[in-house]
Image: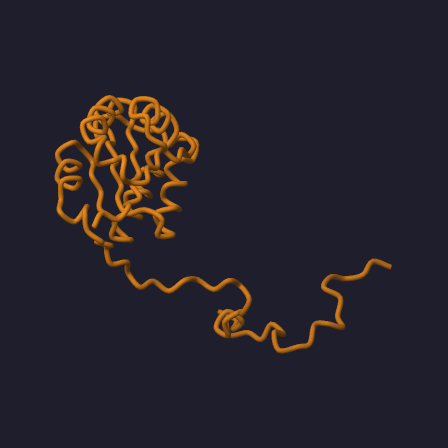
Length: 174
């Protein structure tokens, strides 16, 4: 049994060569999975490996957020993110948000060659393993306004129980 895993591959500039070398070494394993990547990393992986890669925007231009959205929606099984701990990133809040989402949604994350090797060689990669996703209540779509939201905070009646349909929302100029 070898179910297809959906794997995101991301690398900061100083870590791209390391990710490419790692991916080349693991090409036989990666070819049986669905690959996703941000900008330049995706282009380089596709070219070097000859494998199809779903490419998103560059990380600083929103690619990290696109990967994060896919992850939050249950569209990823593994995040391999070779980030550079010694170099300040202009999009550091996006990087932190992506790593936070991986932790929230219980997605395995490899941040260097050693952790990527451990995960990719795990027997769980060949099985039907799916990490348990937490039960998180989805926010309202806005169709219903909860009763507590209509109560005034200050205890003053602001006319919320009045029928406003027949009244003008602003004074009419004469």
